[in-house]
Length: 232
Image 1 (cartoon, helix red, strand yellow):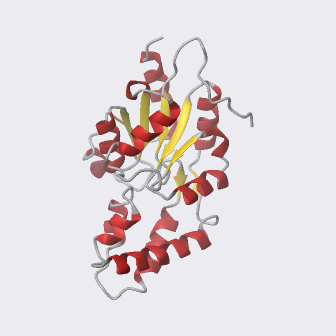
Image 2 (tube, rainbow, N blue to C red; image 1 turned 45 degrees about the vertical axis):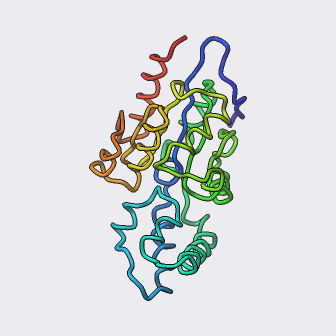
């Protein structure tokens, strides 16, 4: 595995490719659902179905649990219980989607600047990409701790672009939730929805993605096509 330089070639400006994490780069759905169920086992109030919870993946945990708990203390209790389960079972239940490692390595080798923009906390986000072997290719990881506003707000994507010294017109954002698409569109970057993650096609379309792909191979082909359209 070759290590990237994180610099575009001098011949032409290559686009920045930003990725969501869970459901886009890594398959962690079993972990996320298991952590939710574990947290609500300690809770006597209302609780979501698996389908309802999955539909909100992509929003910060405080927001997700805030839809069911009524006080700050209750939310913090649920979040803490969730994170305990997540930390204990993370490595066993976190894996890259098939084809993602080779795609990411090649994009970096070709000169793309890469970043991760996720609603997961910074520590766990970095743990995730390190665990699956992707950390060397992502000089910028923007988790929920880096900004005060979160997806679907554009701030996390804008933060990543500032870190990479890139303009929105140079960038694409790849994600699996409608919140990813809303954030990308509001930030002025090209939005690409993927359907191999937690969100089904119809919910994803509510975020108005500019492009939708169903496989890593389709994403690869689309990125090549978009790259050809960027100004030399």
